[in-house]
Image (cartoon, rainbow, N blue to C red; front, side, top):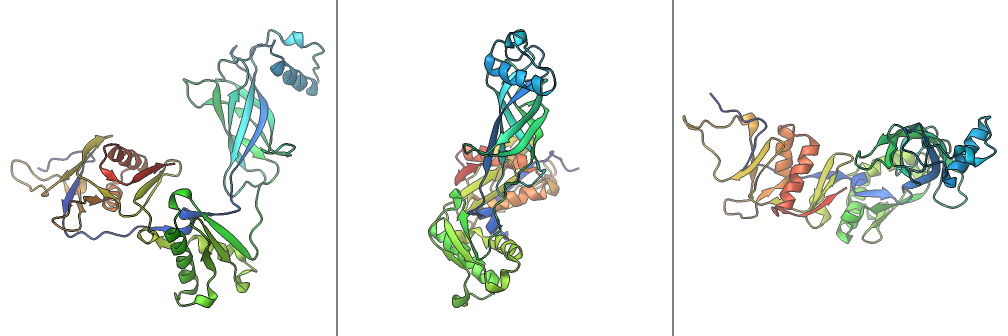
Length: 363
């Protein structure tokens, strides 16, 4: 009977496996120069707190609370009437608009933080608060309200309202008409990377590296690539832009130093350069990673681990001391259905042990 080890990954350094080159799209490497994130902000009141709010003697909270009551048909002529109030907290409300902007009636998360003496926002409800742009005299772009959820129980003075901001004024940059500029993400910057992106766009669009006179993309420096929209594409620039942003590029052609980029928010892992892993042994969340040479051989006393529980990694040759390739490890993760969250944690642990020969970037 085979000995089964739950979700065990044995990384074998051996010969003969074929490694698939990693490819990424332009939109993973760069953004439109007009794409930028914004932060909306405003002042609001969290109500319904169980005695953990600001004291009513704090005029910064008492004034807006009195204004709310007045607008709802219950004016407060003397602020001293609110002196015993401890169920309301004055808060700063912020909402981050992602790249690409926001459309009318989009619902986005908001973050709130106390401004006064309130000790906890737990159990409260954010009253309707207008959110303005970051520039003075900006108009109202969103209205925020909703039930409060603590971000961290150990820090009860900051919280989140899921989908609490409703966009009432659009934040969208106009579509390009004749040209646009791509800006490489900081960790991909480099003249080699910029020129390779421009070359890939030209070759993909015209399907001919020799179409020099018709090239639409040109690297301007180590971070920017200018793209002209051909006359025939200008009636429908959105389709042209989609094609450009989906252009695939082999990361090994970017001529970048070895680095691994893990985006925890989107659950993606990408890397540049020739990323290697030295012999390592670690266990995390029930996953065992061990580099062994030679591969284990089944015996009657010690049968081989089930094939579904282990896969092989390779080096370039039998005498190589460079270690296994990260791409092989990611392929192994895929075969064993390891969650991306666990993959990122394992890569971070390998980096911490000094066995990941690349710069690790966590986003």
